Amino acid sequence: MPAHLEPSNTNKQLFERACRIIPGGVNSPVRAFKSVGGTPFFVSSGKGAYLTDEEGKSYIDYIQSYGAVILGHADDRITAAIEHAARSGSTFGAPTLGEVTLAELIVDKVVGCDMVRLTSSGTEAAMSAIRLARAFTKRDKILKFDGCYHGHSDAVLVGGGSGVASLGIPDSVGIPAGAVANTIVAPYNEVPRIDDSFAAVIVEPVAANMGLVPPVPGFLEGLRRLCSENGVVLIFDEVITGFRVSVGGASEYLGVVPDMWCFGKVIGGGLPIGAFGGRRDIMELLAPVGPVYQAGTLSGNPLATAAGATVLGLLDDSRYQDLAKTAERLASGLKEALSASGLEVQVPRLSSLVGIFFGSDPVINYADAKRSVSIGLYPKFFREMLDLGIALAPGPYEAIFPGLSHSEKELDRTIEAAAESAARITR
Ligand SMILES: *Cc1c(COP(=O)(O)O)cnc(C)c1O
Image 1 (tube, helix red, strand yellow):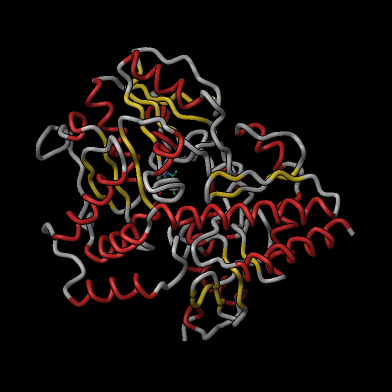
Image 2 (image 1 turned 60 degrees about the horizontal axis):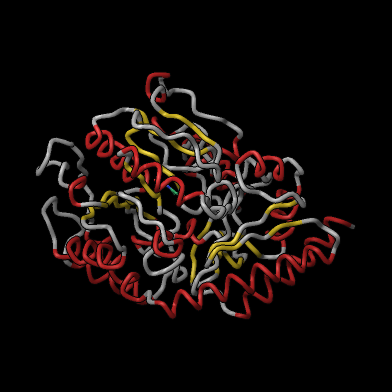
């Protein structure tokens, strides 16, 4: 039997097996546990707030596929929608009612978003939104913020957060200098100089890929004003915040309306998806109406649109209030539990998004986040929590994603585990 087909069932054996034929053993770098140490667990199944790994150990999960499964794992309603769709065919390369349904739901909920096009990932959504903004303005330069992540396309893989940040790579090898020559990187939460040489400003309205860093008052408002004054397209990358912080996403929650949006994660109900949308006059530059090419064999996939439409149909104001309450309990509980052991920690929260930064200095940008991470406590906390059956993201620059499947019981257990973890760290 070839080595890679040997039966193996511990996480360690599986990881070794994976590393032989998948670079680093994973299909997205943060999953390899490089920045927290140890061996990644291999998930065999998930249900609600819980994961079970291949060794049979169970965890309360706060990764939730980086927020993609807001209802929890294997929600019966989503599973039924996917099953139903799958029975009618999984992809056609032709339009379907499901795409129209999901697009209508997005456009109805997000004020100012007149039209939308579906993709298969958030990366594609951001990449295509930028291309469209460049075509619309007939300019090349874009501005992004340090620590914001907009997927792994060349032009935006500078000053990126998330897995890139965890690995400590400021940008990636393999990207020609020319591909980022028109990308200007500015510090988050400071209104930069913006003139009419820019095509677009792209920003996470709530930064959630350098840990959680909410916008300071005036930041997004300042971007909006300067973009309007200079004819620059303001793009909100709401791949995380869209349909998570409120019915209308961060733009509604924070009261600033961009010209374009990127979506992903929640809108696919756990299946691969992305979307970009915005003002009609911009969106109608897209082929086949206009000259901007953008396409995808699996874009608007029937399974993904069925799952996405089901989840968006279930999320109303009262669900977001539930989510925010859950997140508030988690945030205040974590803060108290860690402080009780004398650890200095900040637990920022915005609506249903939670973050954790060790240290006492406020974190309002990427430099602050890196300073907090350099204290080195996150990997220790992560490992103790994992040992106690709580799965946080395996990187210090990720957010915590409480969802609708986390009930009081899971929150209580999580907060107890945090207190115990803090006690072990400081002992
Ligand atoms: C996850 C994420 C992306 C990339 O989405 P993928 O589906 O992983 O390609 C882009 N922007 C933000 C803000 C994200 O969090």
